[in-house]
Image (cartoon, rainbow, N blue to C red):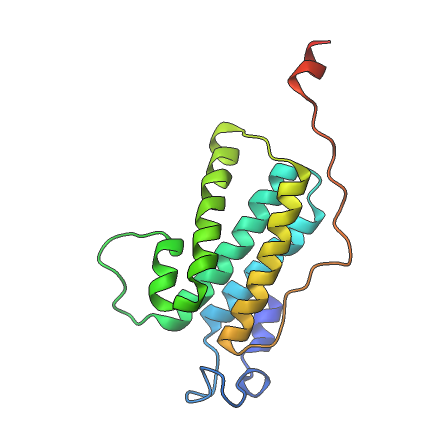
Length: 169
């Protein structure tokens, strides 16, 4: 467990009036750990020098934030068959349905990057970083935890990719 997660165990820091955990008086450690890992992925995306690495890290950030919502809202029963986080999220958090659809599409692109070496533009990667950051903020608000994830004031410039024509000549 990361050191920042250890600090989150003090329920007085997290449980406020009206948050979903105020009845129990704490935010489960698993939820906080997922949010911590989401933040780490977002920071990694901001530091990535390749657009593909940035895109994958940004998607992983959003995936971990969505998993925090699932961890907060599911019981021990679970589901009968393996399902995508993006498929389950709208059933447990209908207010995140559009986000789930958006990141489900990005999951296909991420898979193509990881499996097939597909290239993405720096703009597409940067756009996904911004969307992931917004999504994390919405998730934190939804779960009643204060913002714990923030991007640096700037993104590391992405190294230009060489085109296939550049390689030939």
